[in-house]
Each structure stands twice: as C-alpha cells, then as structure tokens.
Length: 116
Image (tube, rainbow, N blue to C red; front, side, top):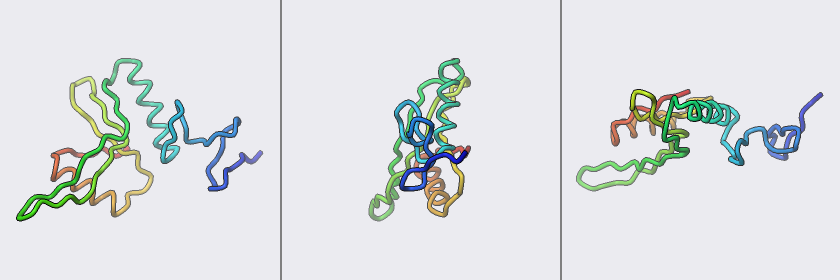
C-alpha cells in the first residue's frame, strides 16, 4: 500500500501528518527527525545533557572592516558525558554552502561541526 503524500511530495504518516514531525516539531528532513529521537532518548537516559535545537552562530569576518557573512544553525547542540559540547548537523547531502559554512564556523568560533 502506498503512503499518502502532501502537495509538496512529503510522505504522511497514518494520521495524515508529515513523516518528519516529532513532539510537534517539523524537521527539515526525516534524517534530522530520526536523529532528534535518538538524542531525546540519550537525554532521558542521562548520556547527554543540555540538548538545544537550531543553535545559531553568527559568521563575522574581521579585518580592515567587520563583515557579517551570515549565520550557521547547528541542527543539534548538546553536552556529552565527558563534558564536551557537541554541535551536529544531520546531513543527507554535503552542499557547497554547508561545506563553506562549516569552515567559517571553525574559523570564527573554533567549533568543528559533527556530521551525522
């Protein structure tokens, strides 16, 4: 049996909701939703703490002038059991835009984005 799709081609669940929603949150992809559900379980088990969705990082380059390039939003940020702050992006496809923003976040903030 084929599952129903909405007008944008997104798969719907049995109740007619998009298959990429969880806890009332609409995620950009099913991969991101599935990762959220994993992290939520780890949070409940005490394996991680301080789970944040869509943490923003301004991308600012300073030189002769200060230029705001834009911003990067990490899909997930949390603290692992070792006390390390982790920033993750649930990626299906590594676009040129993502690769550039990942480099800018590293250069501007010293943060290496983990891809899952």
